[in-house]
Amino acid sequence: MARIRTARFVAAAASVPLAFALMSGAAGAATADTGSIAGNGSNSIANTQGAQGNGANTNQANNANVNGNGNVVDQDNTSTNVTFTNVWW
Image (tube, rainbow, N blue to C red; front, side, top):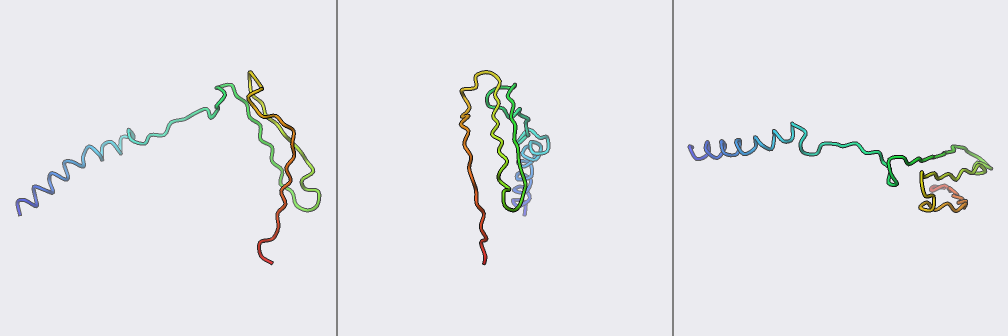
């Protein structure tokens, strides 16, 4: 019986540092980032269009902006058409 109590005491004592680390936020703390790869002054534009029916994909917006050297961004003006079909008949 004394061995079981000793084992339980040792296990409880060993778990205290882990519990403290988890509750203090030292482990797995979230950090914020600017989200920019090209630097802190980078700009990004995203345009979306939600439409239905024929001619819904006629609007076109291809935008890419980077402060500094613009040669690092692929700025080809290409259009991509996506056709959705029914999965079930």
